[in-house]
Length: 296
Image (tube, rainbow, N blue to C red; front, side):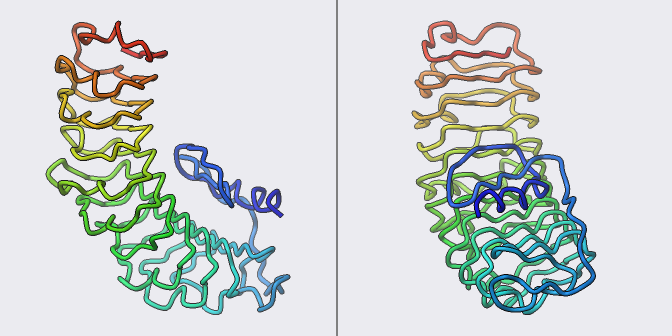
């Protein structure tokens, strides 16, 4: 069954790979689209109700991608574990759209036109682990996301603010992808990520931030801030990141690295500083015994 799930999910991929083992292993790639051709006939699934018109259903996976849908289909099989709605024209996620999907583990809403999500839309999804919202028109992430979430991907939206209330209680999240949004440093609320005790990977690349966000959780092992407007690396920005192993800061405007700032990341193994404005090797970099790869 797992092998079949992987086969069904492979074409749905849309963000940077970050391998995290779990019940499902469907990471989204940056490029790609669904290749499975929809059928025009209703399909009787192997687990109960009739499959929504033109969708494909098999082994609790419901694929309704590339159908030009303007809303979430009704009468979705109640024991669906993966729902793929990418590459449609959905503009709004309403309360009740997922009312019977108590066993849903993954929801793919990539590449729609979503600008509004009801505060109660995700309330029934008590087991949701992976939420993919990339390539939509969201200006903010919704509040009241399921506390069971382990992975949130929302790159290529119109998000400009990251509020603490949005991430409150999401202490199971491991992966957070927010790249290619018009986020500014002033739009990141102090302590926005502090409650995310398991957060291991965060990507806020290709935005408008000018400094490393403050108050990142010590659980982080990968921090990707490439393609921003960061001008310097200071000690405060890296404070407390004792587990950080990979730091991406390429394609910024960094001209200085504060003395001692790299001492805050004693387990750093990979540092990307290419395409910046540095004129000399940062102080202390040569003595940083754990670094295995440097791109300057």
